[in-house]
Image (tube, rainbow, N blue to C red; front, top):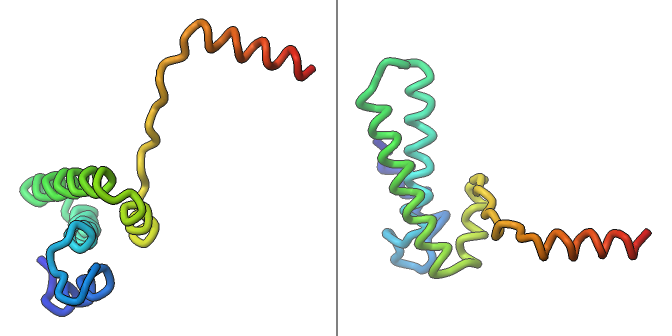
Length: 112
């Protein structure tokens, strides 16, 4: 659980407008801080399964909010990921088809 002062600092840092307390950016920042605290707790208390379950719930909630933010406002999403230093999984491209492989091979031959 976050202290009131810490939560206010996070809100002040990530708010999108003057009275913002619940935007996606703020919620993600708060969840990120809570996740870091729980991860540190679990390093010491390895058998605390209820906290581990809470951590997984928070990670899932943050993932959903990040997906929503990416869909709605890509620029804000990218800025937030940089500020929070979050890692994002790369999207896999479409599977290579035989025609693509042939084109790539032909392009390499013309370069040589």
